[in-house]
Amino acid sequence: MNKNFLALGLAAALLAPQVAGAEGFGINEWSAEGVAMGGARMFAEDDAANVAYNPASITKVKGEVMKSSYTYLSPHGNYKLYDGAGKEIEDGKNVVHAGWAVGSYYVRQINDKEWFGIGAFPRFAMVSEFERASKASTNAFFSKLNGVSVTPTYAHNFDKKWSAAVGAEINYVGLELQKNSYHPVAQMNVGATQTEGESYALGWNAAANYAFDDKNEIGVVYRSRITHSLEADFKMYPASGGKITADAYGVVTLPDSWDIGYNHKFDKKTRLELKATRTNWSTYDALNISLSNPSVPGVLPSNVDSAKNWSNGWRYAIGLEHNFSDKYAAMAGFAFDEASIPYNGGDFMVPTGLRRTYSIGARYNDKKQTVAVALGWMDVGNLDFAGHATDAYKSAHAYDSFTKIASISYQRKF
Image (cartoon, rainbow, N blue to C red; front, side, top):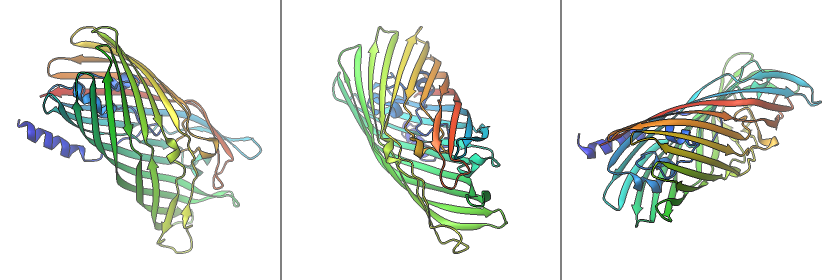
């Protein structure tokens, strides 16, 4: 097979949006090895997924490599709803609606100093679902964000100590929101609404690595914020029957972030990674939707506003990798993700508190192929949040939430 045609064909395939959904909003599950090490995988050797975790480390790839990864995430959780007097009025749980985080990567070494890489993976995605007849449904009964970032990347190895990379990011989001429309005076549902649309936007990233010696290395990655102008279709299905349609428009800014990592090799078989990620979630201050051109004039409001006011947060991860031989390795990891959702900005779209993720994995590799598997368990934690004026409750408590994670990756050298 002609290698130039292989690269061109893969790059074209990566431009197609890939389905991704998961509990939470920020996604870190970009490969099985990354899942196994809690996301602390910025300095891996010969791993095409470095395009996602740390573009400056694609200089550690020798030759030409292609990789695919599939991660299954299954969220579970319970909630309680309260009225204005603090009395419990409903308890329930989410409808288990699993999602997939899919990653595809290609890296080619151009010469001793230069590398090219491209990846398609989700940085932001979520899916949540609740019973349509529940009071929680007046806030949201189905929410889904499909997301994928395509990142063509150029990396340069300056010397034995320094390497750096810069890349563009083509970010796709497909958003679907469904809820019951609640009349607070009549205290009844008056219909169901659906908002559905998609958008493409551009961003960029940059990364650098510095090796102190053969055992110690640090790295930093910056990913820019991305602003989406989302055009969508709005539909309302009144309880009395029929359908009302309108054009919907909203602006959402996905946050910029910093990754700072440290790698220590104890010996040729064992290494430890530490990683801290700062995400500026404060860019998600509101989800405001403007409506225009309704099919039934005078029935729909011109704006549907929802304040979020999320706070900036940190994610900390530690990952351990041990090679038993040239072919077999084991990995383990732990990650702690701060809660960024305030009491007055929470909702059933993303009912997520702080997250603790425990994970393990294994890898087999020979001269041409690598297969890795990983299992993880994410303790999502509790979250209390206030209801909105159009919700059938005054406050909510999400608890006993967790996500099951399973991942597999396959890589081949050419």
